[in-house]
Image (cartoon, rainbow, N blue to C red):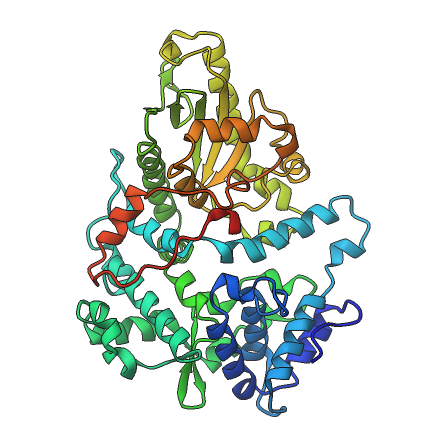
Length: 489
């Protein structure tokens, strides 16, 4: 069985390989494969060696739906395998070029392509409920007011997450197919008894289902180019496909979960309300981080300190037994220029993160100088900086990447940490939050490591904030998705 190419190919050759087959033949096979290999441990390693990774299957489906036509050949499972092998064989233009930062742009693209698929599903589905429904702020919010979710989704936030969860559950059970006729499955009673079928039908039709004409309308923005695969996949907004035969297909069931994840919900809100929504989420996310930090055993968590009349310190200061952690919160999200590693990628990262490094350095200096406003911070404890972002910024701590965006020189060891990683760190059982960060961030052998990179096999306790979010779901409590060890992400 051919499962590799003898040499690298360009994206146009890969696209041509996919377009040999009519979508009505290829996409159902892709859906079946994605449903079979939806669990992370099923597509990592083994004889397939990652060929059926969800990002690969999602792009093959995108190419077929957007650029394919029915005047082509049928497809077999061997063809699916060869399309996946072609995807893996596509060369990156920056690795062939002479640009000094070519390798670093390749690493950046690879991180965004793959890492976002490997986050804890349980964390991703619970986070926005915890932020938008269970976190409060003293600031007056612009659009996140009672009823905002009905306006955006046509149902409650809880119901919206439940609908995405059920779409994924059915697609994985029925080989990538979906039908509302299957909603009478007794195993789904906890959900379907709480969400009226009319609501499900309307929300699915409006927010989840795209017909073949919808995908073909994306042809101009999804044409073959060297970096096409890293651009926005239309399946992220419409993960269920109609118009291919008489069935609804879910080419990659994980897309249904990403639709209702914190990232998917953020983009839906931003598309409707723009910066008003982003600013509201930013205010709430800062307080959400404080809630997570507040669960750390035997640590004192202090809010930002106002000094010099109106200057402000970092957002949170965690005083542990072994170290003081200066925490700056950024609800920043990546842009397509960053994800594609475009010429403006490094400036884009600097715009998202550089200010946070400055805030940490300023706060550290005030503590070091024994400023009266900071006299209650133990000066004898070592200090560390932690920048908590809502979205994962892969490899942001790596020295080459960090040097590109200006996060290199800092007064104290400082790392970038996503919300997903923070949710793990506060739940450590065999060590304290500050002790873990102190050991990791001061070890020269671990320079540039992610803050959860050495936690494979480590035992974690519950996360009370996320537990509260899951307990609030009105559609009951079906078996929750596993919160995989972060070292595997």
